[in-house]
Image 1 (cartoon, rainbow, N blue to C red):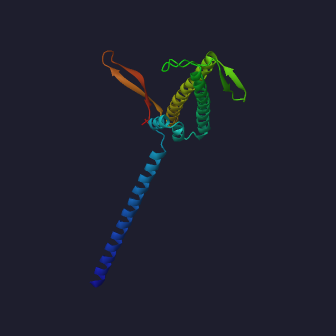
Image 2 (image 1 turned 90 degrees about the horizontal axis):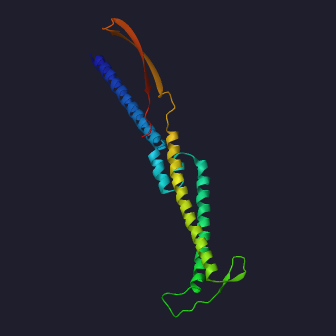
Image 3 (image 1 turned 180 degrees about the horizontal axis):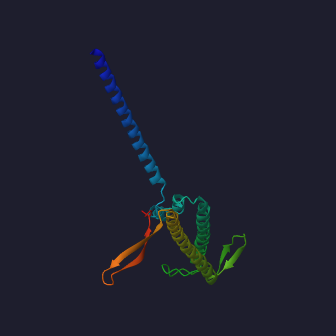
Length: 210
């Protein structure tokens, strides 16, 4: 009798041990699946996110799309345009001050401007320029600076469009989830009392643009 009780207790302990092991394996499997799902979501390219990131910082959307080879192009474009804008702005500020010297002052009617002013050029040569010459220089550098600012805005917009289009192309589904099914149909026509056949075409698409 005692042997039967020991044997029954042994069987019950083995059953609970196997059950607990199964629960642990299932828990680990669920955790690993959830971790893999999280990693997949983090690495998934989302066009809306790439567009917003590129709108905030040029090149960020290209990083999201994993197109790292475009970063030197984006950085080079903005650095070049920034240097050009700074060059024209510095010259504009310089010649504006000299232009102010040879221009009449509305706030001081008693001020008599000189006919010319000595302006040092970038090559070290000092030239005497009158009000008309300084106005042309002043307007030219200001116009070039403003055009460069417009170029920066266009480059920024192009950077956003590129990130959006590239993200959509990368998320476009070209797998077997896009399929064509051909289904023949045979139906009976009660009027003519005959059979007629038809063919239906069904396209299946998997929506990945979320």
